[in-house]
Length: 251
Image 1 (cartoon, helix red, strand yellow):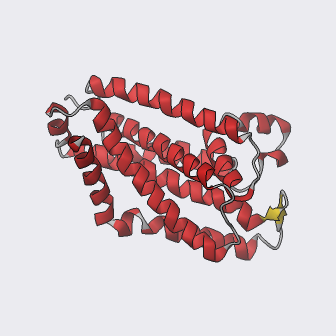
Image 2: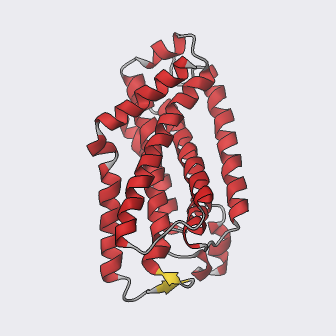
């Protein structure tokens, strides 16, 4: 397993070396969100589902940070290796494809966990939040981080330029994050939109983490866990097939 450890170590040292770009922005963004909502919105919407509004939205903000950190880690790292032609050396080496997949994903998961810890530390001082169910919190953070690490790797395979890396965050992740689940419960939506919201995978991630923090969720948390597991398994299967075919690697 030395090869898997080496690849993971390379990924971790890569993002730690530029921590001002990979870790600090998530903390600053969360501080700004909390400051803005605390100052301008809390007076108008003070309580949702029996909890303070700031405490309600914080798990969603935390999950947003984990999602973006995990996605950016694999997408930028994998495509950067493609751009520099160093990825070819990895694929001609004896390392198995599943180890390549895990090496990139483990690095992204560790970055997601570090971001989660830093943002939670900020929330500890700016909110009254506490973790009621630690195992649930860890499970949902790891599964979410894995899913978006896989999505980032998928994008890295298909990307032809650095501009292509920003397509999924801009047109998929950001709209799905902002429109449903983070800043309000879907129960306040018009009935058809409540149904449509259930097709948003980020809804299950945010509510799973929210339940572990404040015991409130729009969705059954066990169903959320099953949905996350299914999504991860499907993406792992697809990516292993693509990696074995050297898709996006061969020129």
